[in-house]
Amino acid sequence: MTESKILTREQAIEQAKIWRSEGQQIVFTNGCFDIVHLGHIDYLEKARSLGNKLILGLNTDASVSCIKGPLRPVVNEYARARLMAALAFVDAVTLFGEPTPLELIEAVQPDVLVKGDDYTVATIVGADFVLARGGRVETVALVPGYSTTKLIERIKASY
Ligand SMILES: Nc1ncnc2c1ncn2[C@@H]1O[C@H](COP(=O)(O)OP(=O)(O)OP(=O)(O)O)[C@@H](O)[C@H]1O
Ligand SMILES: O=P(O)(O)O[C@@H]1O[C@H]([C@H](O)CO)[C@@H](O)[C@H](O)[C@@H]1O
Image (tube, rainbow, N blue to C red; front, top):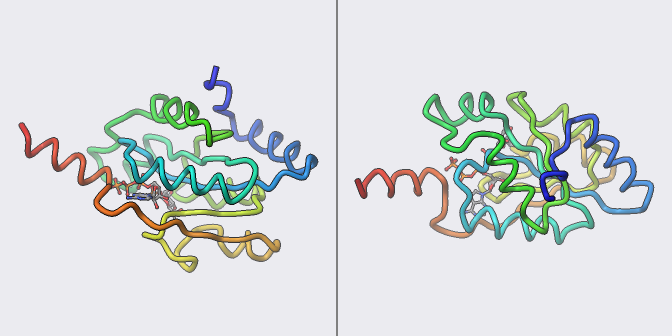
């Protein structure tokens, strides 16, 4: 069951240690992934191709509400986690409730940190930590026209 990819923070830290001991390049990315769309899929698949294992930090519902507003998320954290874990190119999912993934990134110690290029290296939380350890920080080009906000707006306009 892909549900077994959903790890507690302690489990994610332990799994990262195991993968590191095996010489696996660990890629980390994070996000809300509220209503999943083509941009998410494209970017996550490309993120995974930058290393050997992809660990995804997923914002909790409370964290999403802080970032995206009180009407979000539309999809709860368990459902979002299951959807992300079902993706073949996602190797582990772990929830984080902090406003940013910094503590999680410092705990997991990825070799590669990735976000879509709606961010720059300067705005990616954890970039300094990963670079200081000799790791890489990469951005993936957005698929034009896709965002959860746009999807919500289109659905609202249809009813
Ligand atoms: N169109 C896209 N193409 C590629 N990556 C994307 C795209 N939109 C978002 N991402 C990336 O997906 C990750 C999760 O972003 P997020 O969940 O905020 O998606 P979103 O569609 O931007 O949501 P919202 O519209 O609610 O802000 C981020 O790393 C972001 O860079
Ligand atoms: O889905 P989003 O809004 O792209 O995810 C956010 O990314 C922020 C980013 O990592 C800042 O560099 C992060 O701080 C926030 O918690 C969301 O995960």
